[in-house]
Image 1 (cartoon, rainbow, N blue to C red):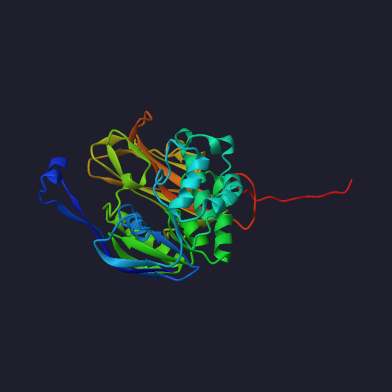
Image 2: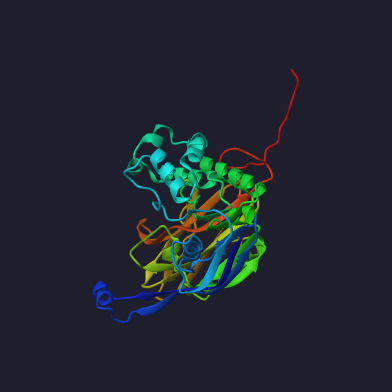
Length: 393
């Protein structure tokens, strides 16, 4: 069980490192304010919210890594945490040595941990690198080993911050199956994820944090819909909200002739959605404002899967739509409507405004995400309507 009572966390921000050394008064920033939560034994609780809302800070406090400014946290039983990439592992030690070192940190005997080594190595699937220094690992290998260690030490409470964000699809599916085992074993799980489809699939309850405070909590689907609605509201008012678009995008570039204000996915009724059924008619809405006069701009979209593979992309020029001339200050709205014939996976949306020669005005990589559900367990990236004809010859 996890009991969080009136947790607040304040940081002092200094303009220069010298100000900190001279103990000059810094600007107060409250990462968390008066958070109260109770997570009963065996519950899977998801924290969602924009970047900077305090999710990771709360996990660090629950894990004992960061001390709160006020309030208290009580955790019943052994806790295992998978937070920042790189935390807890010595880069000079091998994977095997780091696993054994973690056993001492967690209070597990070395003999007990040695008995778990085959299972940890098998789950991580890093082969001979298990006996190589961790500094030689790729990001994916590091995460696989860290996650495998955390879930095999038989914790009572597991705290995870975006553990699946850098893993490939095979590893993600393996983790999800392991989560189901943990659920059956009665392990309490507190996790942060920007993958809203994963939140709906795994969580028993979700909490939405905004500006360091609890905005809402309850059924995962309801909280996710509330979050998506807030994002749409911030964008429709042409404001960045707690998280600017560039914070959500993995990369942004362009000459600045226009700025993309919002990128959202909609169903046929116009409602903003985060999950679509395979074959459902959907629209991607892109809103952009011009900062200087532009002739014949182009607006485009690109859908990628969670491995970063380009799945589908198009733009207004490809589709034969010329947009005309725009003056500085004018706003453009474009809807790309199509039948979502994608297989059940998680996807991201990249959006761009461009000049007629193809150079970028504003390009936002992976600025929005959505999930696709499908009743059929098809393989690959696409889910086509298929008829089967059978003859006995």
